[in-house]
Structures are given as structure tokens and as C-alpha cells.
Image: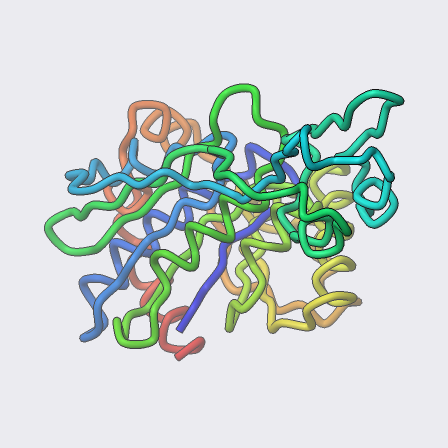
Length: 282
């Protein structure tokens, strides 16, 4: 079972929900639980879980390298590159590693076999555990521009059929490529939203993107709820999105989160909510 926790905008409490849910799942379910922090541009799930890190691995992607002696500047490589990662000048070929998607088309179609591949480091992946669950996290290297490949590598490294585990994925905020890569293949997506105009706007963008490209089952958790959440609640009703839980607007919860406390530590009553939610998803 793969559960992705996502949000249309940052700061809605997505990581707060993901880490607390993982802790409760580890207590309640008889299977292994693994929390994967896919928010590689701002990973912070470790602040709440405090795992012991047992291993690291570089996340890389193949990029082309030009053999200047074999290259005849024909321009075929730039012609087949759909991402603008290759520029052909009168006297040489330039490769822009950060624009390359690693598809290999230029290497395969070079008529002079003047291109080979090297590993381009995107960032670092870490794995470890707490006393009750497994943990993994990706971190994009400073200066790198694309999070999607490292998220793909992180999921491939951790999600293995023989592991027979439940995975809870903390996705990046937003509705762009990195978010969709994180939630792709999820059995269920928990959408964390806040009842503000911007929160509703960004939630609607994410719902539209997921339905258009993935069609995965979804439900909403309203954070900073004041009981009756007006337009956000009306939107969920209109779009047939079940509201699975509400987390009250609370200064105490915010202060505890700023100190790295898990939600279920400061709000013990959420345990019953999470247990019911896990039962419904199961």
C-alpha cells in the first residue's frame, strides 16, 4: 500500500500529517511502515521522526559527453534533443547537464558514435529507521534545478515488492512535475488543505492535475480548521472529495510543530482519527 500526502501549497501541514500518520500506522498495523520524504528541495520529516541514519547513496542521472575528436559537428544530437540541453556551435558542441533529462536519444542517434554518458550527481539519498518504522529521504544538491529525477530514484531505491510494506510518501508542495512524480503509483492521496482563498485555489490546481494525469483515489484533510470551513468545504462537496479529518486551528499545535514535536504527541486525540482513516483506506 502506498499513501501519498500532498498539498497544493507549502506550509499547510503536509509533513505534520505524514509523520504523525506514519507513527500511528507503525503502532496499529501489523506490517512494516516506511516514511519516504520526497520533498527533496526542503526535506524536514527527519525533524519530527528523529531517525537513525544507517546508509546514504548518491542520486545520479546519465548525461552525454562529447568526444571532440570523433564529433563532426553535424548537429544531429541537438536536433533530437527535445529539452534544449545541447547547443551546436560552429566549432564545438555544448552540453547543459542541468537541462538534460537523461533519455539517451542523442547518444543512440549520433551517426559518428561521438557521444557517451557519464553520471551527473543530482543529490543525496538517506535511509534509516526509528524504533518503530523505516525512513528514507532525498536532498537535492544546492544549485541543481530539477527535483523530479531524484524523487524517481528515491522511490525506486525504497519501494520494492519483496519488502511487503506500507509506504507513506511526503510529497513536495504544488502541482508541478515533482509533486506528480511523488504521488504517481500511489494507491491513495491524502490532500492537506487550509481554509483560505489561496489554499483553496492551489488545492483545486492539484486536484485537477492528479485527475487529469493519474486518476488516483483522493481525500482531504483540512488543517487549521475552524469547524465550518466555508468555500473549501463547499468545493470538496462539489468535487466529491471526502473530508477525512479536520485538525483544529491551534497555537499550541503550531508551537509544538516548530519545536519538532509530532502531531500525535501534542494532540493525542488525533490517534483515533488516524486509526479510523487507515482502516478506511485499508
